[in-house]
Length: 620
Image 1: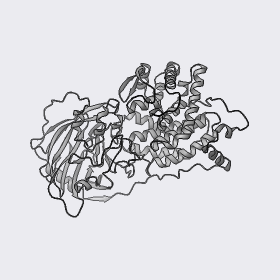
Image 2: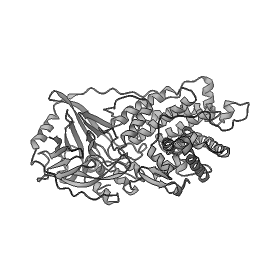
Image 3: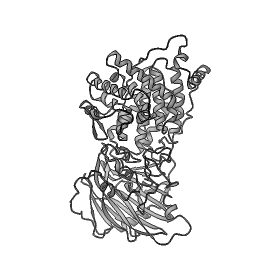
Image 4: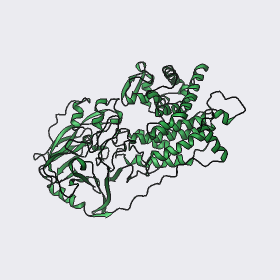
């Protein structure tokens, strides 16, 4: 269990010099403003539930009896060449078409490859020192890049093909020498094998432009990888890994000879896996924005494979893309980059824009995603996102975080309240040793009881017991003739251990310049327990914000890089709670940990409950 984001820095994250800026001036008390904001929370009007897309029935596409028999026979192990053309010799491996994916890679990463380095979440890894063997001791992000060949897209984005194809051919040859056949280890997980085969097929000009012998070896490796996935795809680690495997199988069925049986087999498996990948509102069950982006990218590349052979994809693929994009946009902040949820960093606006444009889906952000779990409110230049759901189930978690009821808040280009984020990027510039700390409750902007996580954070990205139920209500509040959004949610993550329910209410003003909130601890039973317990309500601040405490330790001033000035005040019912300023960190869109600060409202509260109202407001 984590003991706060200041511990994260002590445990080894790179930490720039501490700021020695003087404390900022703050007026003595604004408690009437806080009380007025809290009273406004009760003057609500019910909000009509948002319309959501309903998942289509993701069953195998309807085909005639012949196709059905071919699919069954292939699944039972009959070779595809025998089913496709039983009266002739199996065709030699070759590529039937050249794929042009609308999703481009990152030029900076491609330039680094040409300079002899993998650029992985900001970390430069010399290519000459990388061991391509499956059992090589590499960190998870490096393993994913090396074994999944996710860098091929970046290589193609940095220069004309003739200038960079040699690098692709050389690295494929090195990988084939280190991995002559299937073995145990990261290279042969279903997800990595699927990513690798799909990357080879989609970026074939970068790996097949060498001499005839090298081309033959690579084509045979493609066919061997497809056969391996045919047998192993059902053993994937999770649903997203399985979708990666199925996408590669379908792509091989489209682009390699005698592929019709494989394509029919793959389409049936892919559509079933897609139906199990997401919730009813289109969010992947791991609740990770990075996993959501990967699912979209896989389908974009697969759709490009269909286009390359002039074949229409199953309608369900387009339906799924239409489901996946709105939830991703829901966790965009006002700077258009992503929020830091379930291990993700603040993925840049450019990457998100490129992905959405390549998808061809034109839609607005989803505002109320009860299954995906993120509630979004925007007003003026402000955006508020609240985690209003339990963490992902253990079977779905990839880098599961105990972030229930945490929120992020931004205004214009400035992020004001954030989460630390970046657990999924550990192994790049983020040190692996702080990965579990970044997944803890204290690394998120929410309330922490007794320095304990609201849900147990386990090793290897897994989640244990804790939050099982979250109640969420979304309403409108009339303010000066305009509607403001009020979010109220509660979770039971501390009920079993401490007998307390955490309830959080957030009210975003209609003009976006004020956010009032209240954190309440309520007894989970009829009678509260005796005694007191320590609590901390953490507000991790955006990069570059300078904070200074008021003399009474019940307020703080925030000077933002854009020149604006905000005040944070505790309400009069907050008991003996006081505000402290502590160290924190935030992982930016390039995977770099940045030293920041956090406001910590801390104190002791009765085991029978407590109430802590607060107000964050722009001044001037």
